[in-house]
Length: 299
Length: 113
Image (cartoon, rainbow over all chains, first blue to last red; front, side, top):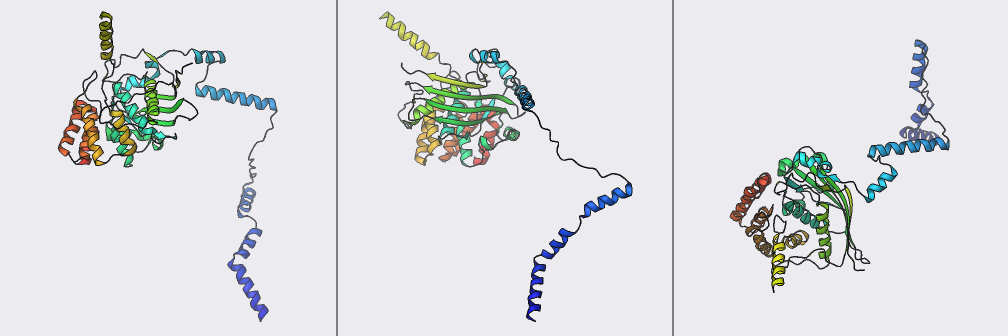
């Protein structure tokens, strides 16, 4: 009686674990193969043999050749078609390009108003976005554009009603035309804004992209690496009676940011409020990626 | 004496040749302080007093307040509860800069002015 009970218990355990079914299923021949075989027998057609991959063993020379060809194709895709000598020559003696060639969309779309999106701050400086926003809005206004007030950008960002440049995609910007009535939107990524304690140099790296809100085209692009190394302060704060004074450590960093915007937007086409609006098409323009260095240390 | 006069005159001449379209006075300090630490009600009053100079005594080539200055001043007045003056300044912004009409109208709506 006891043995029978143990046997029943074991059987019920196996059944509950679905072990028995699994064992039976594994031992059964596959249905799919069988049906395909039967169809092949009836129709008289041969079963197709599928080969997954073709493996060909190449020699070292052939691998090198393929690598070179791929590199060539990549270079052509990047637009890097200049030879070694020409490329190095242009590094030292850059080719002069007119603004109409460098920023054709700025002259065809003629933006009047610009919205600065809260920058994507990848630097270690907590207040770098504020410094950039203030200085860029000033610089663009002086160039003759209408810039949406910085306080409003800051307030919207504080209230979480505006994304920073990090989370926005180019396709989404058309909505800013309806919301703010602006013709262009500026995205900004700050990579660094710092002064190491062992050096007198202040470095700032940032990427600027101005996009049209009507066509989403890039109107202006620049990546700038700016270095300021001089005992002359880069900026003099306006000292009125009743002012909020900046922290002494912040002043040189803020000043560097100010100087950087001056250099970055030096070749920016003039806006509608400037007397030279649309008259600067044949003036010089810098390259898209620029390195600026103000080095005036006493020798 | 003559030389000194010439130097002073030339200095005055160069000083008047500034290419800036607008004068910003103390804008950098104020806005940086506002952005980096936020203000109490008392400080906002002080801040708007400083801002008044930018709006009411404009200098520079255009002799107009810089873009956005009137709207910012209006917003600060709203924060102090001066709704009538705030509205006036926001409307002033649209008169000087018609491009601002879309967002200023939206701002007036959201602030219920």
